[in-house]
Image (cartoon, rainbow, N blue to C red; front, top):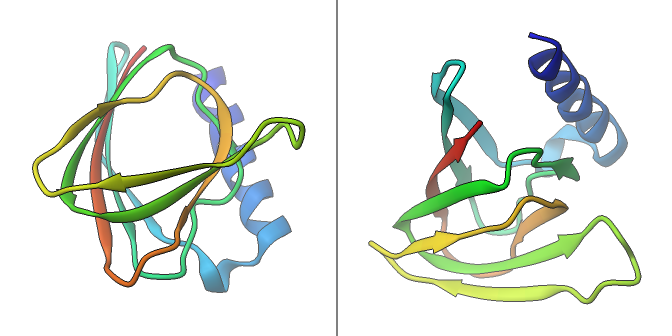
Length: 115
C-alpha cells in the first residue's frame, strides 16, 4: 500500500511540474500484490511525465505503434528514440524517465510490471 501511495504522489507531482495539457493517459487494467497492468495512450506530441519504475521486470506490448523518445531522469544520460510497431513486445528495465510521443500517430501500449 505504501508503494502505491508513493507512486500516486510521484505521478501527481510529475503532472503538476509538467502541466496536464500535454500528458497521455494511463488506465490501470489490473493491480494486485504480484502484478500491475496498464494501458498507456500517447497521442502525437504527448508524454508520460517524469516517473519511476521500481520493479525490474517490465514488458510492454505495442497495440498501436509509432515513434517514442525515452528521456532519462538523469540529464547526464542520452535520450533514446524507439520506433515501435503494432504487435511488438519490448522489455524495458526499471528506470526513472519520461516517455514522449515524437511521431505523428497515436501510440498505445499495454505495460505489465511484475512486482
